[in-house]
Length: 219
Image: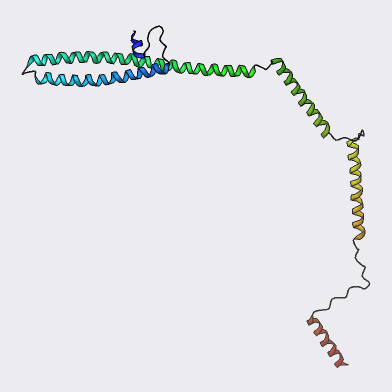
């Protein structure tokens, strides 16, 4: 069985291919498992390093064995790092492929729906229908224009002539109003007597009386 068969649970030629969602989930599970393995190896490397330092001067053989184990753990850790990078790349590519598949599937669904919607449409019939609509609108506009146009039951008049006649009537009415105003305004009466001479002031009257008295006494 191949590596991918072990990872995704396929059983050879007769096995059913996993769906993209199943494969993506399997890859995520594998990433999680390898990440835990990384953490375990990092702790082991720290322990072996402490052991080597502890026995460096006391027990060189134990220190060397600890360093050898540390090297093996570091090598495994580097391999896991490379494997994780590969799996991450494969998972992202699969996710993109799955997204593209869904997009294409939806686009195909929409294309079928559009085809079904246009299935009973004939472009010639559409052109004929649009022509009929245009002609109907033009006819409706002509009818509206005809209804709104003022008519005189076949009689036509010269508007300039009618305006001239109207101005004459207005002028006659204005002249008539001016004559009526002139007849109704009363003229002032001519006085029958002359206006009285204004009397002299009081001092002049007194002087005249004194002169008259003096003349009477002299007689």
